[in-house]
Image (cartoon, rainbow, N blue to C red):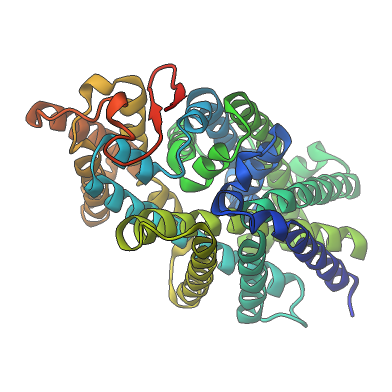
Length: 487
């Protein structure tokens, strides 16, 4: 039995141990299961945000990209970090103050049921596709680094068992505490591997000297990417950070507004360097293994290290996958249970039964996304395009909070519809792709749709005092200062 396999097994045992340890907290009520009782500290928020951001694309994918574009591949993580900081400054405190659960719930408070339904479906689809990606990545990591133990399919199934199991048992408490361990392991593994690779190869300058000549500098800020690509990444990550259910759920689980803001800012700081470290490993792989398959760059350079180093880093790469998948799967389950099942099918469900329903939905979604991972093609290529759909939700949220005078009852519905149609049109008509990335197209059409709705629809959104009366809630939410008053 290899040292690498033993290290991964120990890591899995710790994850399930944490999950069972916090299960009693999660069982106290649906708010505890889905939102950690709204008691997340700055540290837990920061590690949750980092765990959500740093997945397979942020480690293996960055190293793969570095082989062709240089150190600038690390901007993928830097873009996520910028998005997390923007979320902290602009929206995290407001989400916590509004005491909401999901973006669709917020849409219905101010708009209508149609806005809630279509946004719930759209967000759930995005999250399920990303979850499928994590299964694929988890299978690839395990099978490529331990081929004598895992096939690709076996690695995907093992990943699914861990992802689903941890989420099923302890909800956000489980995910939150597990992420402390996962992020710590990611940093230990990546930092140690980078240090050892640089030492074994005579330093970064020596590695660069052995790389083939290119039209750009291997260590230049933009490398082979160009400004348009980097700005596009920042736009995508900033947009999705504001309204993706995973980030919203973390913000809503904070102790208070200040905690939410600070947690996201610290999360951004933690996210920033990891991509550039992985890019360095990708460049080293190109020197050590000139004919390496780009996807195998990071795994292969890691496996060239001593067994303990490679085992810890293997666990770190897989930890990145686990940390992202658990938060995303929980977010998808929350959307389906809160915004579809409870809202439209069984609104009077009691809290104890609702926890059981959440677990059943997470199990079904987890197995369904595993099937999708086995059968889908091109998930990696469509992830960034899919995240562009969050533009519609971000546009609605920003107008709702900062310019409510332009909001109309049907704004959320029509803006989301236009965002969905826009992605389809983008794929059908290549001539539109002169913009370089669908995120630019989405921002243009979603903003236009929102403003046009303000022209043609004369019915304003609900006033703050109306929220809670029409929906039988017990709180009044006010935008601007966003204060909550108990009746």
